[in-house]
Length: 241
Image (cartoon, rainbow, N blue to C red):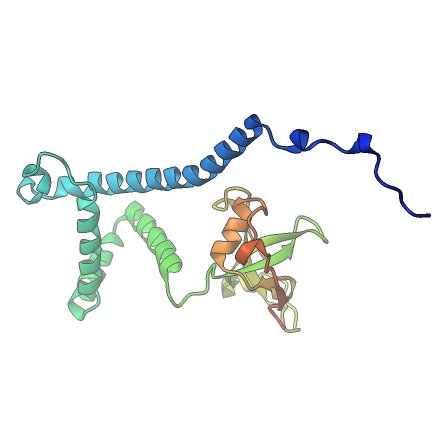
């Protein structure tokens, strides 16, 4: 049997299929919101950070060196520029022998303070781990079966377990049985989550960056890594391979 011509009563006129003015205005509004909201939020956060640094640095600078004293209006970002220059000079001075000697002398004084000692060492270790160029903490993204087998979650791969911890964990003799730490962030706030150890062979490494992994978690899977919206979550063999 051949299909006959469509029933004219089932064909809607073009006027009905054409979007109404209300639908067009709603689409235009949503398009403008998608464009303007990220710009406004980025500008607000940047402006807050600049003012925050200015509020910390400007009180430490004499008024005679502040351009606000000679101009009828304040200059935002002057304190931020001074802070960047100061941190760069501090890093340059501590790179030589004299600077390292001063740093060791200052740390020796802090080691004698009970409360300040623990706080300083903890904060210093965190910053050294985050900004270290030679470390491997949170520079890889992987997947583990969580919360139950068959369900895969995105994790950030940390370092292997320290000897004090590894000797307490069940390690097998086969390659890949050594324990490795992973951080499983929560959606949509990746700064909170769970940190645990598991065998290296149970972690599947992904060929995506940490930034792409964070976007994937914060958007609850709506923003996929890759160009033109094409996902490229190409799972590699386990780390032990």
